[in-house]
Image (tube, rainbow, N blue to C red):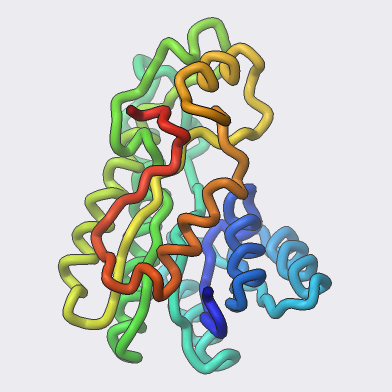
Length: 254
């Protein structure tokens, strides 16, 4: 499905990112695993290579434009081109996730700058490279909380919360996607997004039970349940799609 495609994945050493990288490799593509944690990125790439596929790891902070440019050049030099980028990193400020009454202005702005600003910077730098080579594909990872209002009742009686910064960031990713899709639509560059529901990652039993009851079949997803949609958006099967946001949430947001 992705035969020979070179795909850069930001946050590629994380839960979803690693699954995306493995899916790219299994579909015949070449994942470039980028992460601020180069040791974890090397581990993910090494595991992919041990399975008989090609993978490459590079350190990347998505808030550093110079680093992004260097990654693009390194990948182009190594593989001849770069076909796509998956914006999947999850940077956030040190006070991210406080109750809304306790969020200070500087902390709110810090997380938006790191996360949404980082997605913008990656999209900007890769789009310029894609325009020069005549083709390219951007896939952004948003969230159902970028599309619908939070359901705060899920978190009552738990230590979890739904951060106000996260809602603003992921809603911003949706329109950032549409902006880049419209701006570059005549340059051979596509830009789409996936909006996953909750992904299982050690949440409390109370939360999981409530969340699962709102879904159709499975409830909370595994990371591997989302990668098929990302792979589709990277593939030629979606070559006439741009500016779209695909929801994968087992019916939670209905």
